[in-house]
Amino acid sequence: MPLHDRLAPQARPLVDAMAAFFPDLGGAVTDAAEARRILSAAPEKPFPAPVVGAVEDRAIPGPAGAPPIPVRIYRPDDSAPGPVPVVVFFHGGGWVICDLDSHDSTARALCRDAGAVVVSVDYRLAPEHRFPAAVEDAYAALCWVAGHAAELGADAGALSVAGDSAGGNLAAVVAQIARDEDGPAVARQILVYPATDVRQKTGSFDANADGYFLTAAHCAWFREQYLGPDGDPAHPHVSPLLAERLDGLPAAHVVTAGCDPLCDEGRAYAQALKDAGVPVTESSFPGMFHGFFGFPELLEDARRALADVVEVIVSSRRDRKNDGDHGGGAG
Image (cartoon, rainbow, N blue to C red; front, side):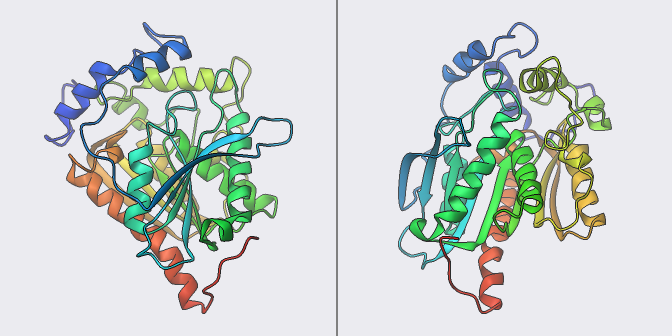
């Protein structure tokens, strides 16, 4: 525990419990497969999964020359009149760990509360598949969802990309790629404590290096797995904050936690987007930690953060209605 603990009191027991089951990445545990094995043996959350209308696992085409991408599609119940918003969701885990199951409750909550179709993407993980494999899978998934929105009962004009941590990184990067390659029109980018500057030199890396669940040592190990020995952390598809231009991107919502090594880079990306003329909303939680978004059952701040994200998703549809455009197409 840090000498001057800045965590909200209700968060400290949760952080300590999570840290007790989390592998010592970059320390005693250096093998990705072993890290995943340790995580798979950790206790599951004791809360019932949010109920949605339907859940379907399927595989969609991957990038050229790559295998199909597993996705999990969540559909809202029939009370949500279609076509509804659609969210392409990328899970966190440092590009190395976690999967569809680890973020199932989060995807379900977004689907239920926003009345949106959520497509959770099981992109390829490092070090078996280093950068840019995850980016290529993420963009292929975005293109597939945009092209199959009508089949999904969704409005391609109310399409958001979203993710937490490494997933937030992928969401930001594919939003840039879609702009640069005249790809799908993304209405919103929702970035929950995103990694935006993988050089890892911000002040929050020093201030929150240890004692708040995600550590600076974890982050360094994740970067090593993702990029390998010769990778460039300043590549704009690795560190979207360093992109040559940020104008012309979709409206963004950025969630940050004050006790998170990634806090400063998330806030810096929000500011850089604003400076480039991109509409940005922010939800900042000074007493929270990296990972808090996944615990709305326990943390009031997580419930607030979830409600803010849901409002952003819902607003994508409301804006479409205000424009007089009610339809969704296959694109």
